[in-house]
Image (cartoon, rainbow, N blue to C red; front, side, top):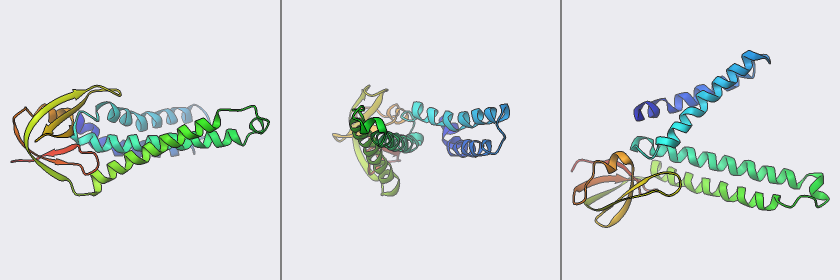
Length: 192
């Protein structure tokens, strides 16, 4: 399942975008609506799949991080734009609108969080990965923010792991792993 999601993710996003663009040249009517619906499904279903299983497999960690960063930046930018539009409206000029400043600040915060997460993913991709070697001293699971997150400590240093890596490790086990430079997430288990 993970391999299918990993290998079809970018081709499906591209196909969804192409179908969406193609629907713009189809004359208005039922055919256009059907094409837009198919484009939406082809574009969004792989994203939902990555959000759901992205923390379960090493192969999808970078996909999930990049996708989350892009959605945060896009959502924050749209929110800031909406706040600016509301502030520029005639109702705002008459003093009838009070929430746009707070909305704009929240949007800016969300966009900045997306930029920060994006920088973490870029560091994981672009910078050399660190190698950590030693004994697994502790293993634990946290369940905050929408799902289980797996962690191990190697020689006392905490690392994030995915479920597939977590199930391979045991306390006291000697390990050698590659760790992302930005996220401190185990991105590969190396031979000893």
